Image (tube, rainbow, N blue to C red; front, side, top):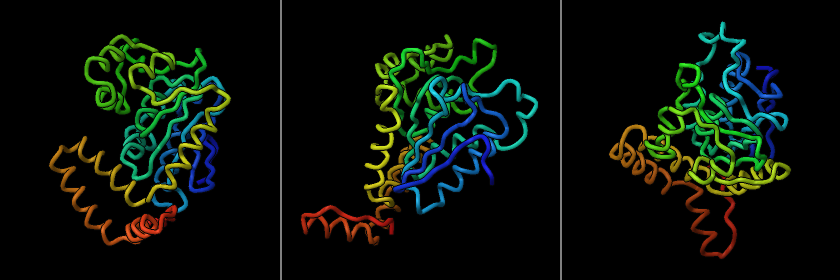
Length: 255
């Protein structure tokens, strides 16, 4: 698929997805189609071990659903399909929040495994849908309490709060706040560090946590055991143990 609404680049096992509809990078049918295609292909790619999602420009990570495109809301992949593909991915996703992350933009960020946000005081993150008499529709109602706890999530959603980066990090909504000029550099450094980890073991942890949180402890534990048996016979396990004994850095291949 040719991408017109997003920019996708890959290097050193890191794939960066830029939502490219500045200034606010709102989500229309084109973004949904392209983002779903990109995420689906990334999951199968051996050239990607970590993913960064960010927005074009400095004003918006994403303001969520493009209201002017509401006629297409039932066409193409549903926002939930995309968010679920991200949150259930066996490759870690990092949201590099360069500006406003509101509505579907916030839901995109919290679907990612990690969140790094600019310290720009004008950048806000939140789920303001209730102000319009509607509710977050792309998993925000389910994911936010898992991230913040029930009371904080309710407070944010019911009062349509928009938080600054300082407020967001104080409650654990984002993992790190950095100067705007350093955002992509910091996100990339973190992503590169993740690519050095053994890909199969990373996949096992991500899938195990996802299944455990969604289907319960017993289902998660069952998957953990399956992965443990699979990993014990992997080349990465042999490499990890050999490198440890030889006192050198391991070179994991994902096999």
